[in-house]
Length: 277
Image (cartoon, rainbow, N blue to C red; front, side, top):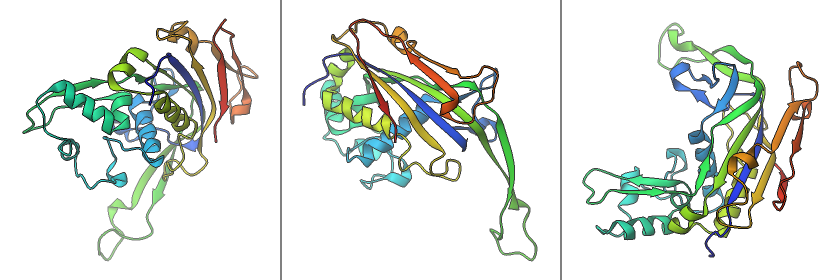
C-alpha cells in the first residue's frame, strides 16, 4: 500500500428525518442541541459509525462495539494483549497501526493496567462535530410497554417512557486527512478510499429504534484531494467553500430539497461531489 501523499479535506451533508441522530445521556437522551437551537452530532458518534462501516467492509478495528465483537476479546485491554509483547514504544505503535485500520486512521491511546508499556498514537483523520444548518425542533413522545418486565398482578410503574427525536435537520460534517500523521501511522491511499466509502454509506447497518431505516442519509459528500502534502489551501477555507442556505429564508425545512448549496471554486483544487446512498 502506498502511503498517502496529498492532503485531503471533506464535507458531508447529512439529512435526518424523525430520528434522534445523537442523544445526550446527561439530558435524558434528547437530541443534542446548542444554546441557539442548532442540532449537534459529536465527533465521537461520527467516528463510531465510521468504525462500524470499516468493520462491515472487512477491515479489522481495535475499538469494537460489544454487539459487533468479531474476535472474542471482551475489552480493549484483551485486544491489545493479542499483539506480541514489546517495551519498544515505536514497535508497539507500528504493530498496532499495521493491525487495525481505526488505529492508523484516528489514533489510539494504549494505557492499560498490568501493561508494561503506555503508547499514544496520533491519527491523520480528524472529524469535527456536526452542526445542523438550521435550528432543529426537538419533539418528545410518551411510550408504553404492552407487557410487564417482571411478574406481578398489575402493570409495573416502569411501563411509561419517553422517546425524543427531531422533526427534520440537515447537518454538516467536516473533516481532513493529514499527510504528516499518515506517514507516521502508515495510513495509505487505499485507506483514504475506504474512509470515503464509509462516509458515503455512513448509515448503512445503523438502524435502531431511535434511527429507523431511511431516517438518516448522507445527502452529499464533497471530497478534495490537494496536489501536495501541506495542501494548497487551509482546511478552514476548503470547508467554508461549501455554502448551504434555505431556498426561502424563514421557512421550516422538511427535506434536503428545501436547501440550495453552492461550492466556491478554488483555483487548482478540484472538488469531487458524491451522492450518498
